[in-house]
Length: 191
Image (cartoon, rainbow, N blue to C red; front, side, top):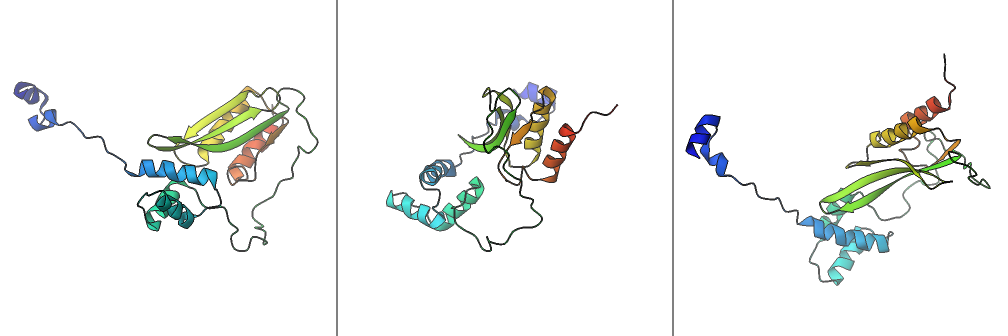
């Protein structure tokens, strides 16, 4: 071992080093918080803390709040000034009232969900053809940045172009980049 270390010009002690696997003690608790949140999505961090304490899990509110923020989940409750409309955020009409998907590429649906993993969470965006139920495109990401949604849509639009793309009114689907990508695919080809 000494000769090999000399030949490679590395410190001999580094050849014996075996890195320890970093344990995340919060993963088990995050899974339990996710189970409670899935059952009662209107619970905030205080009620989830109480539920965990009732199940003999020693935890305080600050830790539950920190983990819920890390997971990106919040109790469903009304916020301030919900009756005031944000004029910068355009609300799009629902185009599918009374419309039935009658052929491939007539209506696509796009949405984002999260997947619980052993080491945390991943976010999945999927685009589905409503007629055939075929997954046209999908992307995974560790963060909720807009770029992975745009990549999935670009990849889907290389195969074909739908008449209608249905989504919720989330920030990913009402952003300028997303709308510009729609406009580019709807515009007739020049040349």
